Image 1 (cartoon, one colour):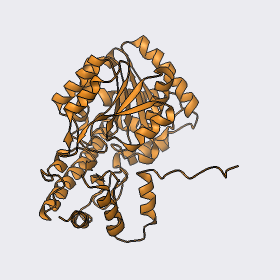
Image 2 (image 1 turned 90 degrees about the horizontal axis):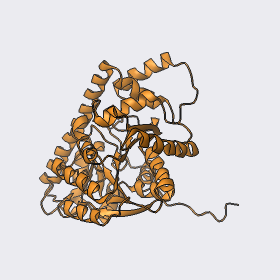
Image 3 (image 1 turned 180 degrees about the vertical axis):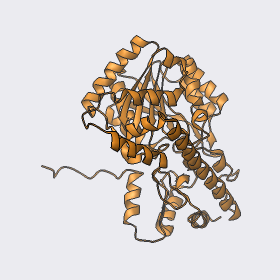
Image 4 (image 1 turned 90 degrees about the vertical axis):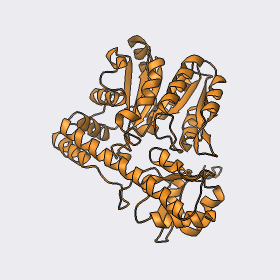
Length: 401
């Protein structure tokens, strides 16, 4: 019965991690998969998370199913982290939230909802974007097209091309935007540019879908939400997919949220009913533990203060590695763009689009046991003081720097 089945291509990111696991060279470095690592190269469990889990295990009374939309307390906490407790959309009751299995699960719910309720509309994603965006929405049956985002000559945002492409979007199309710490480029719009993007979405009648996976990894929790809030200032309707994998370190717990922002309470309820039907047909109801950890931390002043301090430390470590990476390449005479390597410290979040070519990426893997994504994306959060000199030497070798 299975003889006609052919092997699927490896995932462009997770497949690299599988290859990394098989590599027996002791000096190997994995900078492909997007996980935070501390200075020792470990992905830690945050102290605030440990404390919250201890309390939950002591107080838990049931393993019964969660509601389809998840814990209402989680929904409130997730909305307030996203928008701020005093946001007018929350006061008006026009935001409905679904607890999802990670940000990926939220995106798939979005895809199912769009296919079933916005048939014939196109979803536009940045070029480049997170590789799994294409797969998720294709599997849901949603048509996907790219819009320009990166200027590869300068490793900066090509805003004119981005806004020009928006003019060609049809009314009712969906515009996928990265809320902060753009994956894979690390390039975010400025506040002024976000204002222009928000105005374009409103003018052309497109529905913003904001992938918000890295809140707190750019400049801070509030600062990183500024672009999203600018979009909502002039667009009464939007979809938002949020992840808690990175900022809470809850990768394997699969904690995410799918928010529907509607023009009024009645519309929010109607759209929410359609999303609920999508969830029921997909995974029925979300897992509880990771969401309960998030709810416990955000609902306790001391734990929230501790978590925010740990989040700041993670962000500072990433930014410190950006500075060190630029300095290490500069010292070796490597210039990844004609303008040099300054783009590394101008970018935000876990990733940098290095400008390395596919042959250079392949050479890093074959000759130096360094694994990065074929696009040249480097997970800066995986760079440590110990592996930094090895990485810089290897890049110098493959680039002739």
